[in-house]
Every structure is written in structure tokens, then in C-alpha cells.
Image (cartoon, one colour):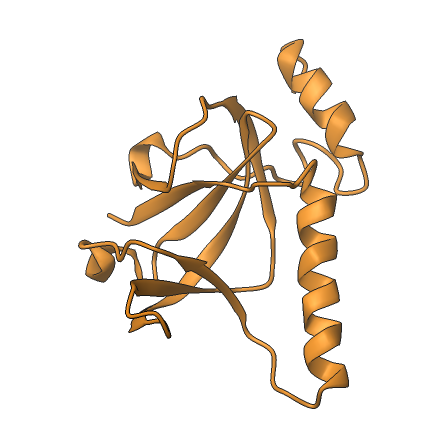
Length: 144
């Protein structure tokens, strides 16, 4: 069974914002002639990283709801220039919307068991071109 991480997507208003940030970063790397890989840096290193890498995802909390996930390809601990241990979470650039679920704010990240993770939104559930706000509203009304 996979283990996942749950993290607040600070400063992000929607899944589209997150996807836009990923695309901007990819284009910046392309313009600099550097290969792109999406990395999110955290201060703490997950002790259970063997259970996460390859099968786990990083679930993003956006505006108080678990809204999307990205698969975790690797976890790379390192020490920054100030001697502080940190960690790179290497993510796939694909953002997968999930069934929205309320989530209270917290600091850092939390483990999320596979059985507690929200299900992906399939195209059958809600068309991909449906705006995120409309999906959230229909879900809150119990229509999705």
C-alpha cells in the first residue's frame, strides 16, 4: 500500500494556478537551456520515504480543500548553503484533480494513508474542461 504526503499549496488559488506555475517554471528552464524537472523543497525529510517514492503522491491543499495530486518520483535529502537539512520532492509535472475534500490549515506536510486519500476525478465524473470552481460547487451540492 502506498503512502502519500499532504501539503498546503501556499499562494495558489486554483489547480489552474498550480499548472500555470509549473508551465512557467518549465519554460524558464527551457529558455536557460537546462533540463526541467519539477522539484518542491521542504525542510523536513520524510522518514518513511521508502513507502512513498514510486507509488506515492503529493496531495495539494488549495483554498482549504484537498484538490489535486502529483506523483512523487524521488525524495532527495540535502543540506543547503546555511547548513540546514532540507529535502527535494521530485514530482511528475502532471497535476491530477481529485475529489475535493475540506482540510484545515497546518504547517509543513502530513502523511496520508492510501485508504484516506481522495479519489481522482475521472473524465466520466466531471469533464476535464469543466472549470474547477464549478466542479467544487457541484461537488458541494452532492451532484458530482
